[in-house]
Length: 371
Image 1 (cartoon, rainbow, N blue to C red):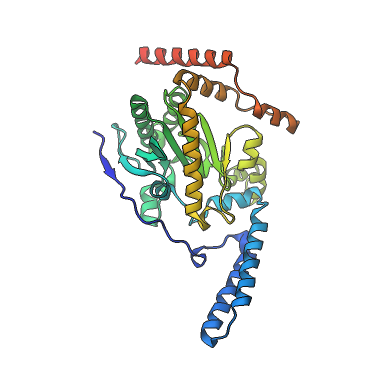
Image 2: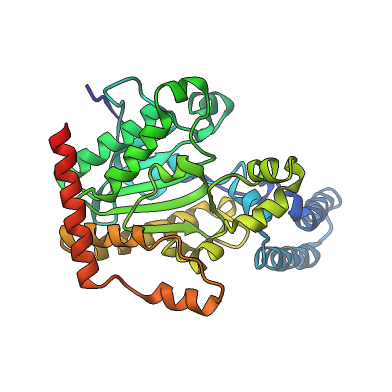
């Protein structure tokens, strides 16, 4: 039996610059911030008027931050996506969604806390929200396996997607995981099959699906809730078949080559847009989502509201057909960047959409007959 609980709306978290920890590439910002703190302390103790100097340093801080974040390297993007104060799915549930009612369990084995599911409202839409949960403190992170879901997590997600399909409710997936949990128990309970079944069923689910990478998008753990009509990424998130450290360990036998691996994996939102693998980039405030979570949440809400309005205007047969055609067109590679740009603008023809819809319908009937 599926249990329910409600997360009550809370006040939006306050952010101040003192609470933000600095990343490796942000050392210039850290020095300026230290100078500002020292000047403020000196002004209080000596009662000197240092307002002009402090204002000048704050302007310098903003200018430096804009310069650093205007051209992040792939590895720096990975660092920002993993920032310890970056908003998590639980933060967006409070800031973006209303009336969230959590649904638990997969009706087979257990309730995986690494994946949160439940009904909610966003904009003017009722939706089913599914998202990876990394946890806020060490206790919660241990319970959530740091956002790495077990097979029961993906089966729970699929069960809730089918419920959404039954009631004609769109599905919103928020991706933030290093990958699926790699332990022995996870393998024994069929993690590969659970993800594969999700990929197949999501491709023909008869309701609109929107997926957004809000932080890390790693491996099959991300793909398990990543098949959708629209796939978007936050500006400073990443989406990859493997983590840079894992790739470096395989190719160069050392994790020290993680920066080279991040460059080769083409994991940033800009690279994936050029390769026609995602549909849209959701902007973040300068300095990353952790510096202005309310603004980031507002951008996410605007994107979801607009996208759901667009998707709900299409007939469900057309929607499923376009989703199948979109999946079949993934993975194209061109030497000439201009060909990528021209391909990005092309849309599936009516004939290909109809053919994909018929094939998806036949696959569904065959699967039902076998069951």
